[in-house]
Length: 153
Image 1 (tube, rainbow, N blue to C red):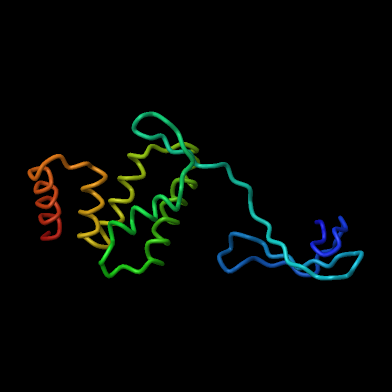
Image 2 (spheres, rainbow, N blue to C red):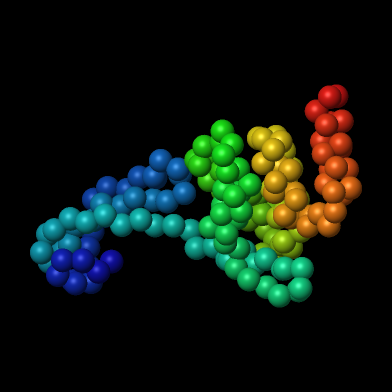
């Protein structure tokens, strides 16, 4: 590991421990030349998750894009941003853990709707109206009726 102070290419590890989230290893190092100490983080290299869109084009999965959609759906609702960030992380991890390197935008949307329904029904309907592209009031009312029937059970 190259020293950030003197650019010497060799250092020794003084301390090594996992981070709080358990996703990285934090290492304290000491430069063998200038003896300054610095911290590095080691992470597992992962393959990118690709999204197959409805028009069959492909793009990298974007946490920011998904979070932005959820923030809009949950606007003026009593849902903390950290709860939405955790939801995005949970969704991303579920797809990464499935070992699939490509997922459809439909799979992502359905997963979001399933989880959002448990968090806030109004946010769910807002997200569903954009995701499912309700064309008229009848489609919208049918979705509301299905939601009402499920909540009464």
